[in-house]
Image (cartoon, rainbow, N blue to C red; front, side, top):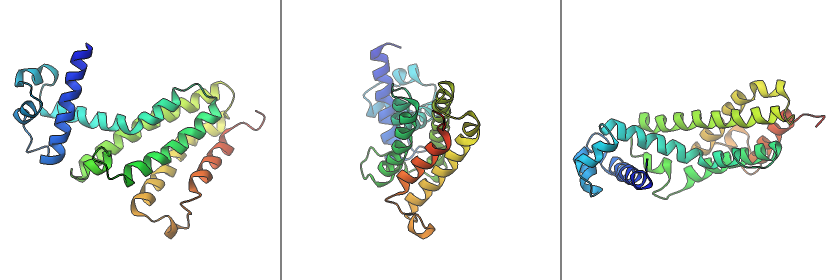
Length: 202
C-alpha cells in the first residue's frame, strides 16, 4: 500500500471512529463515513467491503494503540531485566492513563459510549496482543540466560491474572478495600515478578 493510500485508509478509520462514538455503530452508514471524510462511496469500497470491516479495523487499531507503548519496549535494545522492568511499569501507566484521562483520545473514555460488548472486544484484543508481546520478551530473556526457564513457564498466566486485578481495582478505586497501597503496588509487583524470574546465578 502506498503512503497516500495508507493515509487515506487512516483518514477513513479516524472519521468512522468519531462517527461510531458520536452516533453509534448501528446508526452510522457508509454514506455518513463518505460524507464526513470528503470521499466518495467508491473510494471507501476500495479499502473496505462493508461497515463491519471498517468497524473491525477500528477495533483492532484501538487495541494496537493501547499496547503500542509495550511494543516499543519489547523492540528496544536494553537488557532483558531492564526491559521487563520497563514493561511492567509501562503497563501500570497504561491503566492510569486510560482510566484517568478525560481526553477525547482516551480509548476507554471514547468507547464508554459503546455498549459493554464492544468495550470488552477492544480489551480482549488488547490483552491478546499484550500476552504475545510479554511471551516474546520472556522467551528472549530465557534465550539469553537472564530468566529462569522453569519460572518463565507459568509467568505469562500469573502476569495476566495480576493485571486483571490491577485493572479492576484501579477502575473501581478499590485498592484500599482489598488491603493494597496504590502508592507502592507498582514497585511491589515489579520486584515480585523480577525476583521470581531473573536467574540467581546471573
